[in-house]
Each structure stands twice: as structure tokens, then as C-alpha cells.
Image (tube, rainbow, N blue to C red; front, side, top):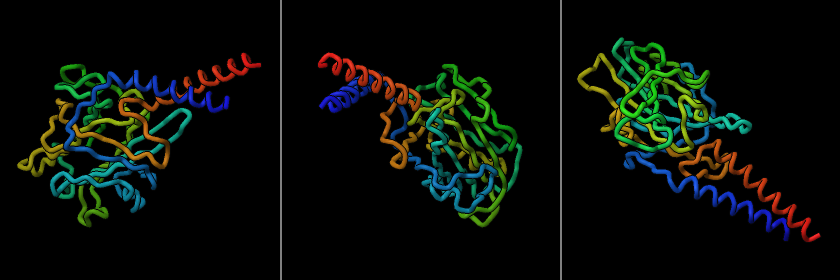
Length: 266
């Protein structure tokens, strides 16, 4: 009976804390475009090619028109400390050149807060002309260059074939540490992905969501995820770190309550 009371108190304490934290959270994104990440089954080798050949088959493909397709998974790297990555492969099936004007861009709204301009929780990851990865952070009106956490972004690309096309084409692989500080991302987040082929400039930029703009987080798509293979769902707006802290707090409070009650009854 005492154990039941303690467990119930722990649950009520945690629920109360979750309500307080999530009550003021505002989610803003383009609700027409929602994706789901699934747990990584084959850990990808970030080298710009499909090695092994089945490394991205655990990701649900999303198409941008008929020329671009991308897929993603997430990996729970460790629980102590909680370390989670999101892994993406992007394929531009009709781009077979390394033009200086080509670019890849991912804009991240780490907490799905939206806005009409990039905020301090928004980040832009960009590679122009097949060069180095550049990272920018929002400042309320635009983007400013920042230095990402060490090891936070692993990027590789190539012109190669894949299971999606036997014709060599532009392939991008990228892993982003979700639980870092730069960039910073929640369990659920919003993003915009765009690529541009300078050899086919008439086609313009191709993006998901297709009408989104890099500088307007309100138009980004929403990234949910399936975590059935790991833990129970975490409420929207609650970070992995906060979830762990709150769970610990509720357990400590519940335990102290149980011990105190036991001493009183004795």
C-alpha cells in the first residue's frame, strides 16, 4: 500500500511539473508538412555514399518534386548523459555536377516556436559550392555566423549512384547532434530543407516545404518521431534534458514522502 502511494505521488508530481512547463509553449509551423523520424536500425556511415547499401532503408523517404528525395532516422547514442542524433540522407537525382553555385541548406527551428524572422533558437546549416559547412544562428531579424559545438555536425557528400538511381548524382549525408547547444533541438522540432543546382538554374531552389522561406520559421515543416523502440512519448515542447531532470526530481520527492510517512507511522 505504501509503495502504491509513493508511486502515485511520483506520477502526480511529474504530471504537475509537465503541465506547468508545457502550458506556455507555443508551437508554430506549416501543419500541412509533417514528417516522422524512426529509430535507426542500421547506423549510417557518413561518407556521402550508401555504405552499407541498406543504411538508409530504415528512413521514411520524403520527395521534393520528382528530382530530390531525402530520408532521416534518429539514434539514441547514450542515456547518461542523454545523447541523441538525427541522421539525414539527401539525394538530388538530376544533379551530377559539382558547380560552385550549388548549395545545400537546412534551417532548423529547434523548439517549433515559429516566427516571421529567425530567432535565437533557430539555426541554419549551409554548404555552398560543395565546400565547408557553415552554421548561422538567428538574432531576431536575420542570421549571424556561429561556431557549432565540437562534433555536433558530421557532413559528407559525393556524386555517386544509390538504390534510388543507378545514375551518379549528388548525395548528401549529415548527422546532427540534437542534444547539444549549437545547434539546439528539442525532441520535436521544425525545419526547412533546400537544395539548388546551378547547372539547372531555371528550376530554381527546391525545398521542403515547397513554399517555405529560409528567413520565416512559421513556414517550416514539423519533425515528429517514433520512439516506440526506446521510451514512452515525451510531451511536445519538453527537451530530453528537462525530461530527465524532472523524472529525477519526481522520484526524489516521492521517495522522501514515502520515507517520511513510514517514519510517522512507525
